[in-house]
Length: 127
Image (cartoon, rainbow, N blue to C red):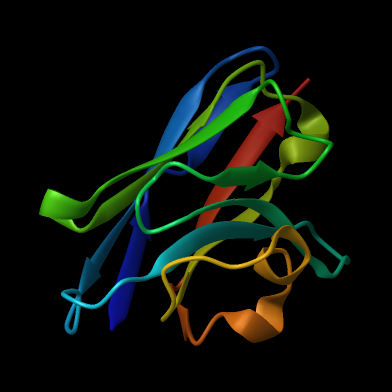
C-alpha cells in the first residue's frame, strides 16, 4: 500500500485547511487510517484515526473539536479537516494505514500498529 499525503501549506491562525491522503496498491483489504504529526524538534504524535467503516474515530485531546477525520473508501482517500488552526498545530502531517478493520482506542494511537506511511505534508500556522 502506498500513501500520498497532500494539502499542507502556510495559513494564519484561525484559518482552516483540509489534508488528503490517497492510497494505492492493495486497497481492497480493510485498513484503519490515521494522521500523525511531528513538530520541529519533537516526536511524532497521534492526531486522529478512523476505522475501516468510518463509524469509529479517535482524536488527540489537543485537536478534539477542531479537527475531523473522514474517509471515502470508494476513492481510497482519507481526509483531515482542520479548523481554528493554531500556531502549535505547525508540523509535518503524516497519514498512516494499519491492515485491520478496527483497533481498540489505545492501540489506534500507537505508531507501531501502522505498517504503511505517507511522505508527510507540511502545515505551517502563523500567528
